[in-house]
Image (cartoon, rainbow, N blue to C red; front, side, top):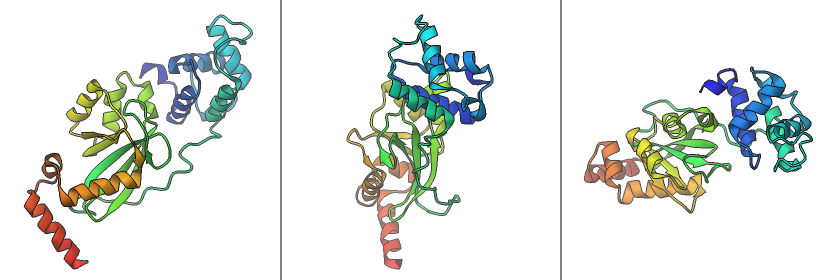
Length: 243
């Protein structure tokens, strides 16, 4: 990502999120405005010196509007974007801390990614979601083991391949929608994409998956688990008898 080589990871995430808050603006356009005002190298501290006036005049200059009055971006959107650049609105702050997990903690489980834009919900499209909620799921247990920002994908030459790489250790990804080329990249990464257009809470999605694991595991799930349907159900019945 050549344009962001001089941008720290923290700054890159803020810039990507700020660009999403600005209607009629693009990520490269915002980076150009920032670097014209602040210099080539951007980090969290430098971004805190950027103002709404800087943003307004910067986009005005790009659009040929010297006074920045007619740039197609409302004042409230600009205020929000600057607060994001300052780090004053951390969208991750309201999310829970993931639980500790070590490989082998949950035998017979699968790793699931849920595309999310809002809290603990399935609410994101694969190519544009803010984050992936990562769960380890067995028929009787589920554990949130990670929350992975997807904003850095906006700086990649191939955003969909980058997103697939972010969740490369997962077996399944739930999304609101996904395009054909993106779905092909997910499948090539050995991840099974499941579209659920109605969305829902992460708990609802996980509960539905657990029910399928018990009652009617689909072929792709059995392949992941490496067991036959009969053996899977026998193992589950034995686990229940021990509880």
